[in-house]
Image 1 (tube, rainbow over the protein chains, first blue to last red):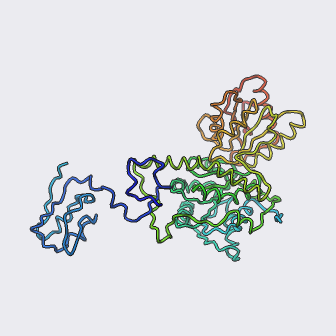
Image 2: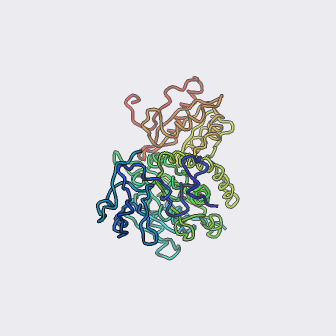
Image 3: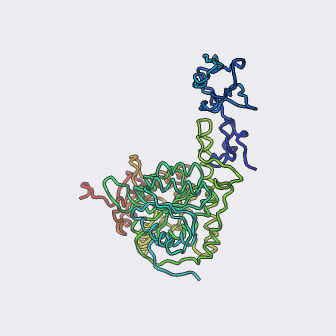
Length: 101
Length: 395
């Protein structure tokens, strides 16, 4: 039985790791929290959004999920706070604020 | 019936590779291993093997190529020497940590500075901490036999392996050799059936991920365990090989050690010269012995220490400097292995044969004389010594 990436974490012992640190499934980077070094964060203002979808392809981290033709709130686990979505939004539907940690 | 032939060490390795018929060879020509890819590409051109030969622009690329092939699921081989091995350095560590069972024929020769193309062990000894298995040979027969054993060891341990021989001395020296029949080799080496590989489409795989601090050390620890676990695999493979050919191999060979009072430990072709000195001294009634180390990685710490403990004084020979001011790499590890034992012999180091400097039977005579002096006086003197070097103090 091949080990799943979700079963390996920073508490795993050396015996529990895979040989050569191989990963036996695709897209496991989605499990990693890479949003933690964000300083500024985008805030989705749903009432102003027209779902034009301009922000989605501009996001370098695929952090704007889309479902049934509508964008959802940000994926903050992967958003780095670059602010590109804020710049491209024609309807001021994305606010950009300093993140309080 | 085994086939008797006369081959150079390079040709012997190439013939072994031909019999194995690996999937991919990625190689860049460099003396004195040049002949290995040269002979092998001849076999490909003649249709004797169906290996994919990838001619690369550098050794860095050669190692990258075989790593890619190995990760993809292929049995991959390469050959290099000296500066070529040095140019692979960065990738050697990646291959080992990715646990790719690559087989590399290394023809040992000096690293330049000053420019030199002749035999010593600087190249592979420099790579000793890269995580590769290392097996050395005294003769053409041994390098052929080691090559046949390489893949069963490497693939079972999932560790890359270097099959080393002395540049020019065995690589270009032609000697009688007994080859194993093709079908026996194929049966011994077997088919390579990795559990996971990149081209297995039903099983997506990522190789060589980023190992951040919370993981890096555990990955290295697991790699160290693989090196430890390779010890019985090497012995089992040697046993299986002996059953096939009658030729016996281990971590090292003991020559006239049973009643020896002093002994010498060395690696590679020099052991042949050393054995001649042992024979002559034995004829004079002197109880001398020799240990020829075959496996340097993993280092057979405990069995080697036990073998050295049979004598009162041992000379550990290094064909490579480490510029540590405390002796060569073999000396440091062999001497270290004695530390826990109560009745340990005196152990002194001789740096010899650098850049192709000849070592003679007379040199070995001198070393054995030195050992008897140490033994009689109960004093090792300076343990870090050179032999075969011109020295104004001894003019």
